[in-house]
Length: 170
Image (cartoon, rainbow, N blue to C red; front, side):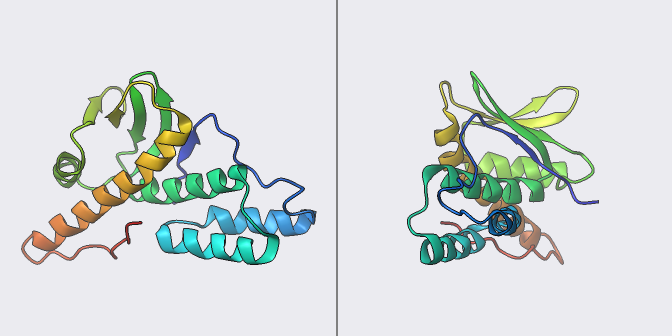
C-alpha cells in the first residue's frame, strides 16, 4: 500500500464555496488537487482553476501547495510532517524511505539546516526557529525536490544505477 503522508500545518487550506459554488464540482477539484505531486501538476491545476474560476484565493493556493509537498515527501518515505518551535519535522516510514545511505548523502548535499533525528521513528528536522506554516510550505517544497533530485543523481552515479524519473524544480 502507498504511504499516506500526514501534514500538520496550522493554515487555511480549502476550496471556498464562493470560489467553486457547485458542491459536486468542489469534490471533483479536491480529488484532482490531492493528485498534485510535482511542479508540473501544480501548475496544470492552477492554470485550470484560473481559467474556470478566476484568481486563486489563498486557502486554495495553500491546499495545492500542501498536496505538492505531500507528493514530494511521500517519495522520501515521510509519514508525518509538522512544525515545532525548532523547525519542521519529517517522520520517516522505514518501509517506504530510500536506502539510508542515499538519504543521508542527499540530505547532506541539500541544506545545512537539515539534520537527522533519531528517536522512536527515524526523521529529519529542518532547523529554523520561528518558522510559520506559510514559510514552511515555501521552503519545504523546493528543498524536498532537491533531496529527490540528489537521490536520483546518487542512484545514477552508482555502478549500474538508474535514477527515478526526474522531478522538475520550480
